[in-house]
Image (tube, rainbow, N blue to C red; front, side, top):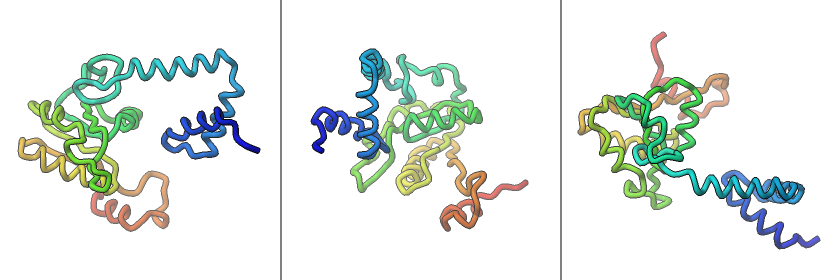
Length: 194
């Protein structure tokens, strides 16, 4: 049976979302068809509203609906945790383990994808280093995240600021036999005294 053009177009739009494959996109499109008119209108209104009201904080680059986000207004400024994306701020905030400021780069260095330091939100970070004691680099433990961490450390250390990297290693609840060699090596290298 031939797929209807409107379903294909909608599925194509859902397929643009990260992690949404063809089957999931079609399932979403069919779910929209099953929605009431009011639910579809509310869904469309929510999409328009989020595009209209969410912007980037002028200080840290995190998502906000104001010029400066709540975290920049209320947090101590002696520590800045540098992350790749706003979703990383949300992940750290869920832990409740950090009370400092953030800075969002909006990407990582990637020569393969032509992402250079000019493509990252770096100048505002450098502009706010006065009075900062420590910069915590919390990029992902992959090649691009590591390259970005090394670049940031070289950029920030001349300011006389302590630069640290989040620890990496074996995650809680996992089993050593299933961990890769790099992860085990990092866990051994970053062990702590009990």
